[in-house]
Image (cartoon, rainbow, N blue to C red; front, side, top):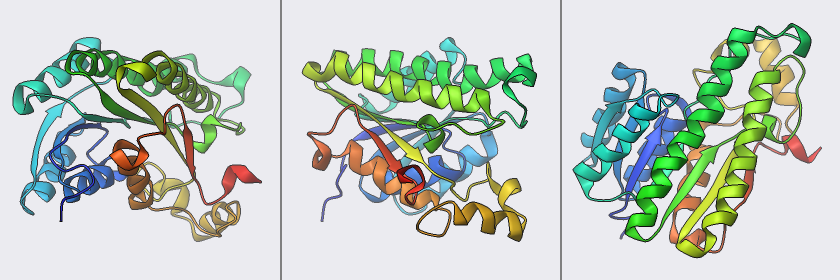
Length: 253
């Protein structure tokens, strides 16, 4: 039985671990050909191996999404390898690694978070959309966050970047709706990934975080991946400009 994205070509940034890797594996399960991008070469190649050992098709391209020349090269490589670009999951992101009040937030860290989480998403969309316009359409899903819909103390750069991703998503969805390109984003709550591992390593802390979610637990990367792949599939053909929460009810409170 054919998968829901059978034969489609998908680029996934941040595909070396966490949500990006889970999404890559889900795309592959559903029949897509993958281009995995990340700064982490070992992790990226491991994701490719996990796909190809099960008979899927995938390549890895080391990419710093904050650098336009590298993003352009990523999309060019995808088209050179597979002939087109049907789906993109712009997922690469960082937390900034620091908690500080807005007036005390380190300027260098602010610039770094915005460069990766917001400018990186915009650069990816810039080159993905150009290719999709050339070929007549495609789908894009950006990774925002529950923190792109509500504020959280001590994480001003991250919150600002993720709110920006939601805004970019809605704007691009409106701009290209009549040209065959759908643009959505997912807004995960706390998900068990390498990025959140430190904060969730303490059982007491994990219990506190889990209690913030009405479902009473943190999420898994696979749960986010299923939403991303659905949004990229024809089953979501009437969905665009949507910020989909995958958060166990976190922002519904």
